[in-house]
Length: 164
Image (cartoon, rainbow, N blue to C red; front, side, top):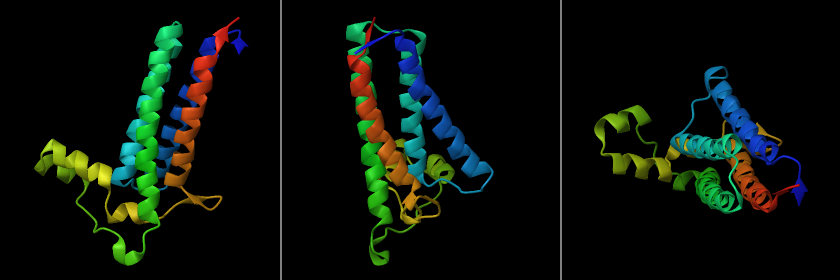
């Protein structure tokens, strides 16, 4: 598909990631909904996707390097899909199978080795199973899962774009 400017198509996902992060911080600091460890990992993945697209906006890559960026963005989005899917799975577990709540992130960073902190962040805890926010009947992790799949599809289309 031929387009006049590739920069616009690099800027749209930057705008989407900034909007998502802005809303996440709004919910955290205005609505006082503290994020669980898996939510923090999902925010980090969204930030990385936004930075990668921002780099392609600032320095529009040629065809081969756009493929490299597309692979990086797709792999990052797949990590986001896996984390979000695990989060959704935790939210749908029966109450007796939900893991116990773990310590807070600041405590883990102060006391545990970094590898253990990452393991705890990616596996989630009981607080990750709690659903405290819904939009159109879907929880926030479900919406981020949909968004990460959308980023994968968008990236595949973005790779095929050619400047006219």
